[in-house]
Amino acid sequence: MNWNLTRTVSPLKSLAVGLSVAALMGATPTSAQDPFKVGMVLVGPMQDGGWSQAHVQGSEYVKAQLPGVEFDYLDKVNPADRPNVRASQVADDMIAQGARVIIFTSDDHKDDAVETARRHPEIAVIHASGDMAWPEGKNYIEQPNLANIMPQMEEMRMVAGCAAALGSETGKIGMLGPLINDETRRYAAAAYLGAKYCWDTYRDRPEELEFRVTWIGFWFNIPGVTLDPTKVADDFYNGGFDVVMSALDTPEAAVQGKRAAEAGQRVRYTGYGLATGCDFAPDICLGVSYYNWGPGYKELIEAAKAGTFESQFVRPPIDWSDINNPDTSSAGFVIGDALGAEERAKLEEFIAGLGNGSIELFKGPLNFQDGTPFLAEGEVASEADIWYLGQLLEGMDGASN
Image (cartoon, rainbow, N blue to C red):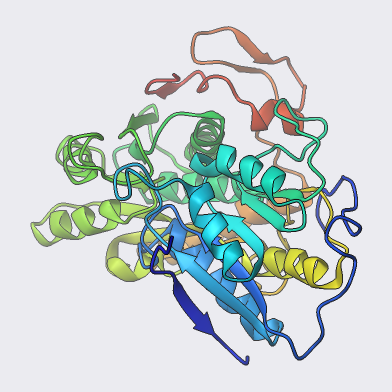
């Protein structure tokens, strides 16, 4: 079967543990003359202004760095846009057309990634956002040709939260949340911790911070299935929330914020996923936390080409000396025009504190939303504590499950 794949051809360290699969994959490096095909399965539109587009940009980086690499893409691989198409079926077709690496780009594809890796042991399978290749994780599966990759976005969500607090006049911050799982809970909690710290530390305001998350039910709008993110954003802006933080793959926080501002409201937003997220409404953008998938993908694809690909759980680092360096930082934050010079200086101070360790936000005492203890006084959360965050935190308004 053929899914009308989109192909572009261009001439143009991490936590990693696991088993080598050189023998399974033939252990024969591809010659420099042969095209090396990579299939990328995208959950949303290629140009969604967020998550999926960031993965496409990562592939462009790889092609520029590794001449001879070709990418095939199929986007909108999700139950709403392609209800009868499984991501593993798409991968099978890509492999039949010569792909040597398959990249699945959504937590929604985790079962498909495992199925593909098992069915095609000679193919390198990369799953963005999962943890099946993490031996210390709860979902570990011993599969030599399967790797996970996920940048350390928690830190940049803290930065976004700080920017939101610095840009708010009401102390009411709303978040457009996708579906509820470990990933989205930890990102929302990180944003809250950043906002709380910067509201309490840098703002001379008597109001208590109000931080509310409204989950729409998926990573983007599915009419008739999810809440309408346009309406949710409008409800925030019209309900006194003067900053809306996006945690979606799509830019409703920016689009509706621009309309509210044009109608005379004093509103701001933070973007998510794509470095150009402020371009939708630059005058009211406080900043955007974004992914830089390119260097991590390059390293894994290079290994696949050389026959040295191995199962690993990769968390590419943030380069705190330059968080927006395209070659060295897996996640960054672009400060928006809506943040004034004084607030920008405070945000940069906060970023420096995260980088040198003087600011540690996942540190006790912290309670879960229901009041039960999460971290005792002075206790610092482990990577697993944060990765598998089971509830939102005390002080946050919104559903935990």
